Every structure is written in structure tokens, then in C-alpha cells.
Image (cartoon, rainbow, N blue to C red; front, side, top):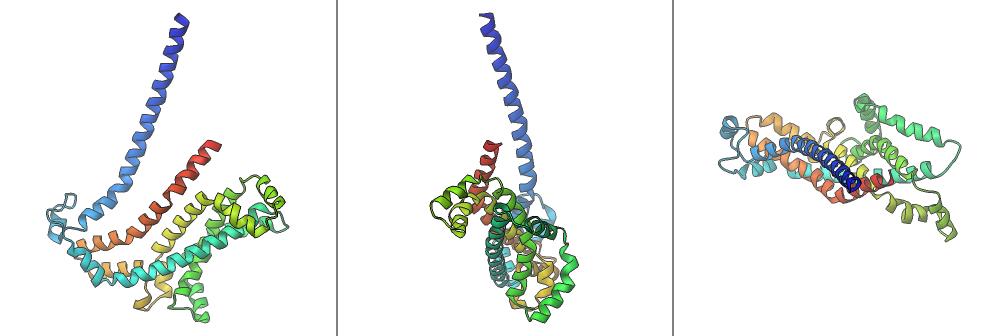
Length: 289
């Protein structure tokens, strides 16, 4: 009986330790989440305030919810045009980058050839190149190609600068797949591209979701290339529009907050759409580990 009681007490002690560790972990995660969410909530709340109310009580709930701030931000800053341009440029660049990066990653991760390591190192080295160091050469290149003030002139640099991180993530993920998968597919008569499209890509969904989110955020928030390569108002992207809005209407804080709130909606929507694949990827990795 004493042995059983000791075993029971030991189990209770272990459960108490696990509970305390989980409680501490959850508390840390909750605090971290609040730290990240609070600025967004603060911005959203202040987007409904007048300038007077914003100055008097920037951390309180609005006494009167002013929807007019969103109308002002949308019409005055021409956010409809900037939104459309950003969506076109960002989505096209993401689709091309992810597909080209996935295809390149498949050959780098699953095939052995003479220049494999050199090519992989070449792509990874691209992560070290600062964007600002390439602005003047990129401007001259696009000018010579006649691509200034075009969507293509923005899409191409976005693809080039997002390919390194895309390939780096996907190659690391694809290398973990067992070779037996491809061998079985070859025995069933599948070709290289059929294996890539029907087997490798579906298995890479968690990593693809990650690179889609990263690429979209980078493209959506990109400012330097858009500032240098786009001068026409009809082709400007959202970051340029928000910068102009902030310069011309610095006293209308409510409208500024409204414009910024509308600007983050697409990134949140993309994350919510792909969140399931990210969670599955993390849980699968935890189980394998």
C-alpha cells in the first residue's frame, strides 16, 4: 500500500509540474499575443475618433464612432486606385515567385547534379543583398528596358528579391521527404513533373503557406522600389499612397488611422486563409521531432 501511495504521489507531483509549466508557457504566450495585438487595436479604435478626441484621450474608447474617417481616407487619398495596384502587383509576384521557387527547390532538394550546391549557395547569397544598394542599378535597368511606370517593372524586382528566401525555406522542407515516395511514384509510371505537381507540392503545403504569407507581406508593404520605379499616380501602390496621405493630411489623425487599418486587412485575410496549413505544419513537425 505504501508503494502504491508513493507512486500515486509521484504521479500527482509530475502532473502538478506539467500543469505549472503549461500555465507559465500559456501566460507568456498570452502576454506576447497582447503585446502584438494591442497596437493594432489601438489603431483601429483611434480610426473612429475625431482629432479633438484623439488628442484628449488617445487610449480610450471612442465617445462617437466616426465612420466618416474611412470615407475620407478612401476618397481623399485615392486608396481605391492604390489598393487595386497593390493587389495586382502583390498577387502576380507571389504566384510567380512561389511556383518558380517551388520548382527550383524541387530540383535542388531532390536531385543530385554537379552544380547543385553552387546554385543553392547562389540563391541563398541573394538573401544578403540589401535592397537599397540596388535601387540605382534597378532604376537604370528598368529605364533601358522601358519598364518604368509599369506593373511589370515592380513585379520583376519583387520576384527576384523574394526567390532566395522562398527557395531557402522550401529546399529545407523538401529535403526531409523520404526518397521512397518518388521511387514508388516512378514504379507507377509517373514522370518528374507529375511527381512534383501531384506528390511533392501537396506535401509541401505548410511550407508553401509560409512563403506565400512572407512574400505577400513583403510585396504589400514594399516602399523603396515603388518609390523609385513608379511616378504616375494611376500606378502607385498602397505604401506610396499612405505616405502621400500622411504628408498632406497630417492633422487628420483619425483618417490616417483609418487608412492604415484598411491597409492591414489584406495581410490579415491572407494569414487567416492559410493559418490552417501553418498549424498543421507545426504540429506535424512537433510529432516528427
